[in-house]
Length: 455
Ligand code: URA
Image (cartoon, rainbow, N blue to C red; front, side, top):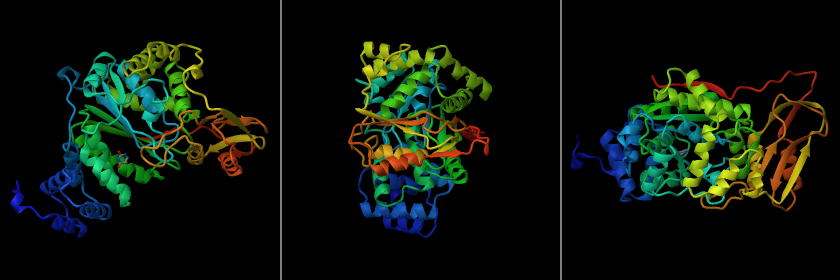
């Protein structure tokens, strides 16, 4: 143990990292402590972040950074009898990604405890909290005692991060944004895993996306991130695994906050699209395997998918909505068969359908451009704190591999007005790629490219 007096000063610490040295556990502890109590100058934090961004950190430094960030605030504690059953998943962000809304109640229906702490959307990716807030009455901010009560009686809750959890990340994340140091493997790892570690989970699964609409465009760089996240999670004592999944085409048929809630409810009623089901059963199956509830991935996948066919996950979602503030009458109606969702979830003022320009087979649908155009129509936010319009979104009326005739509707856009501009319309028309019918045999590609399980 190094005494405080023997420690390097902050400028010396920055110099050490700047010159390619490796920081000791004590040095990282000092850095995170002064960041948390704000006794370091912002310029020094920025300089250290840039030194880390440029020179990286090895596994031991990343482990220490993650551990110290986690310990900078409150670490949740749970009853002893829940040990081994506390699970969660994190996604690096996608288009049409409503997995959390369905997966949390599926896992609760399998006997897990899921204290899911989610985020809001920024730029083109949607946020689970924004989606849930399109349900009238749903409150994502819940005091710790209520989180305990919801987990005890329902088994899952989906809430926002409190001020007390990982305060070091709040400071560092804002500075990373301002200093162009967001895209650093150890800094991303510390940020994501410290927050999951503070949930005191038994098992964690990460959905690391790659492709046109993902943070990482290629499988190789996404895999580096997945491996870094998996080692940091396991180093913290959570059994951690990852899925590398394609993020080119939107997930499912709906994009946009309230439309995604409707698709999640339909999935809970047993009518989910195949690509979403593939992600749900893979991620859910992995968590059941890692937490020792089943002995193989296929057994886990079968067990979670049965919660959809038998209605058990839907009942959990209904109970979670009620405990998070939704009136019982609204929760009951949303969960009934054949309900008119728009009696409760506001529908946008206008809908417009785009038509296919010719006969062909759907080869590709560009999820990134779709999300960017929906963002300009008000579905997303560009700055933290901006409001979003829950009813803006789009429904895909076709999927890759499908044969279409000229003039068939392929996209329904929900918007509030004014009418779409020529630029918005032409960008939307260009997201659909058709192949000549006789030329190509197109099949829908599996979303899951690779699975990493803990050793
Ligand atoms: N999500 C986080 O919470 N932190 C990052 O650094 C990146 C994504």
